[in-house]
Length: 287
Image 1 (spheres, rainbow, N blue to C red):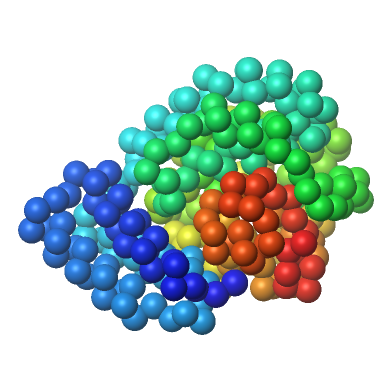
Image 2 (image 1 turned 180 degrees about the horizontal axis):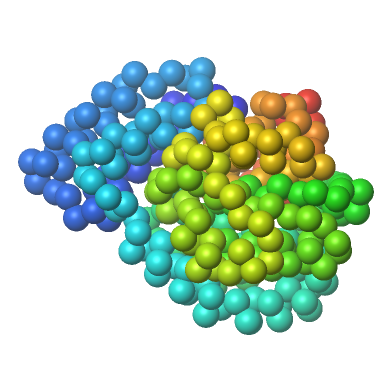
């Protein structure tokens, strides 16, 4: 996947949202926006969008200082934990494994790199009602059956609470699961603190990838993460940014789970915007 002209307004939107979350406005906000604008102007249309947003958010954190999304991450971790018992019951009624997959995808709506606000209840309803089109889900069932070790690439804070349901289900099937989070804060992506709050360390091994890139930029990841990536029998990849950055790898161990949240990704997949996706990586194209 490469950057589309439609991505450029989205880049600018991420700048303005981040400044708003950080409480930065006026002349200081304008100055930071101009610096970020230069990154956007120089963005290569031959790169995946996540590489440009990585550069943008590194600049924003440097200029702002601290983690502008910390409070909203904490808030959605708490919201998701409050919903977890009800979501667990709903997943069980849908069939233990399929329900856990649907719950994990529902959590992918907690994405403040794209959305101004979210309706988590609506996302849950949609995720349990929309079809899992294509053969991706059945292929995932077979891949899980045949795997011993699974690397689970986490995405957002809050979302990882629902990931816990799927990780627990994998553990119940005798699988050894390692969950990977970001090494440093970026947007509302999950870090080790979020994983601990969500209780992931109670059901699997948790590692970080050693960097603050959007998605999974393998050339920037730590040696420990790369070893876990290379040695896993199966890789479950959550979120659009992980799809953007890994889809061209042609690694057939990778399955992508996410909610389609932009028209560019929808066109790449041949799906509707808002669809829920379980897709296998096959020769560089998720199907």
